[in-house]
Image (cartoon, rainbow, N blue to C red):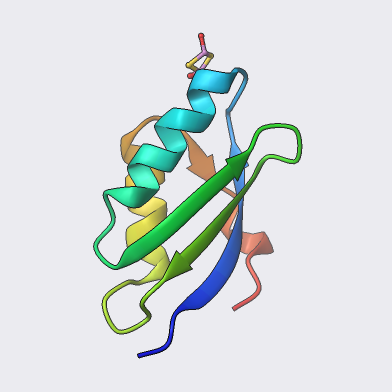
Length: 76
Ligand code: 9UX
């Protein structure tokens, strides 16, 4: 399946290491190919295989590393 892209609003990041933690959590998600997190805009840009990945799974992994996603602002 072709790669899809999504931008997730992230909550709880305050320093550069937070960015790394969130990127690591997203990359642990099956089917996520790239994850780039921006601290000042509090957004994660994710490229993923929609056949292998769900948004819920991404959100689970972000929460697992201690941050949150504003899911009501995600445009699906
Ligand atoms: Mo920085 Mo982020 O010292 O949870 S890693 S605040």
